[in-house]
Structure formats: structure tokens, C-alpha cells
Length: 330
Image (cartoon, rainbow, N blue to C red):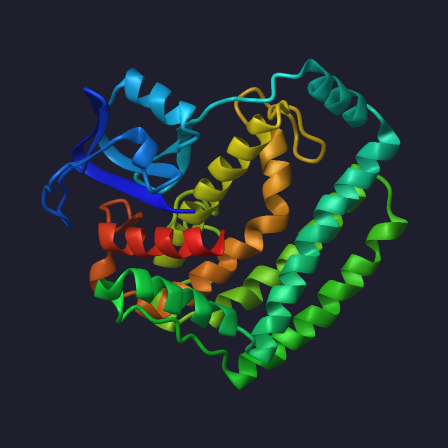
């Protein structure tokens, strides 16, 4: 998977004869660049990520959708607010079976436990890798990345876990496994949610210890608003950014199967939220956590700035590096 990132003021996507034209905008971090002109069939990416102000033609969206290229739109905080892709799998029996399954209390309990179990298992596995420092797989990602992009040969993942942090992680693993073992004995949604919540209280406070102090990441929530959507530090901003991309990627796959993304089995159904997408990203959240850990050593002061409201704004260069890392991880 590979992404094209468009940002700044004046960005655009349009059709010129038989070619797609992708134009970068200008920003305080990046000057205006030459547009990319390419036939849609020759695009070397499967998603276009937009963060800025500009113009996207409906004809361009149609051609990208026909080629199964996802268009993801993020606000200035890196939060997803819209995405476009082709909807396939228009088999009515698929959705009928989905609705019948989600109306069956036995199947609902099974699915809810499955999603939480997968999420907790992935968090425990990630912590175990940090303890063992078995993150060589990212060195292989890095080598492959450098082979294709020699101009970024200095980009290197070298994060190490301190011994005292490893001890805290080990203790958390034991407690997380205890909570996980209780999952089979509970039955109601409230009980299942409580187990997930109890594990989260063990996970994120320790996860935050893995980051450099100068990055000021101590909790998943904004220190002033207590909400993760308004990132007041660069790590939370990257997490938001990564989860938005993951959300759009999962939505694309689910819609391609013909499922109704508005009807979920774990998260509350809402007319403005795709509940099934929120359900299905849970087992993959650890990929975003891991990628943010891996990129932290390359983050420099010039990679981000603060708005007058205290919200972090990422540089285009950091976003590009992070998107490339996410593409290799995904």
C-alpha cells in the first residue's frame, strides 16, 4: 500500500484530458510544488490523503473510485471528516445476514467478546515485544523503505526500551492478562466494556512511558479538554492521524464486502458514526501505537508547531514520513 499526501492552501485534484492532475498546496512548512500528472491506471498509490484547503472535481473522484483509490480528507487536527471510495458487493443477502446476526443475542455476545479479546491480545503482544525488544521487523521495513527512497536514508528507527520501563510493562502484562481471563465469564455488554476499560487504564499510562520526555506525551487525552480529538502534544496528534487513516482503510474494505457500516455490534449505532468501522478497527489499533513508537526518534522541533489554542500542527515532512511508515505497516 502506498499513499499520496496533498496538503496546504490551493491543493487540487482534477482531470485533464485522459490524465489525473494532483497539485500540492502551499503552506508555512512547504512551498508550492509542481503538479503530478498521470493516467489513473498508472497511479502508484491506493489512497490520496488530503489535509488542507483546495478543489477536488467530481469527475476526479469518480475515476479514483473506479480504480479503487481511496480519498481521505482530514481536518487540521488530523481527524477524519470525509472519505470517498467505490462501494461494491451490492448483494442484499450480505446485509440481511449481517442484520440477522446482530439481532441474535448469542452471536452478539460472541462477536463482542471476540473484538475485545483480539484488541487486548494485540496490546499484550505489543508489550511483550517491547520487553523482549523484538522489534527487528521494523529494521526490515526501514531497509526496504531506504532501498526505494534513498533520499531518506537517514530516517532510522532506533527506539529502545529502558530497563525500568520494561519492569513496569511486565507488571502491566500480568494485570492485563488477569482481566482478559475474566472475559469468558461475563455476558452483558456493560461487563465486556468494563473489562476493556480496565485494561485501557493499565495500557496507556505505561505506553506513554515509552516516549521521550520532551515530546510531552503522558495520556491519551488532551490535558485541558480531556478528549483525544484535540491533541496538545505531537504523539497524540500522530495517534489521531494514524487512527483516521486506519478508519478510512477499514471502511473501504467493509463497504467493498457490501456490509452496512452504520450497523455495528459493539459500539453504539449512531446516524453520524460508522459503528461497524469503529468495531473492526479495535484489533488493529496496536499498529498505530507501534508505528508512533517507532517514529519518535526522528521527530525534531521543526516537525511540529502549536496553534494559538495550544493544538499541535504537524509539518508536511513529518506527515509524509509517518504515512510512508503506516503504509509499510499496513
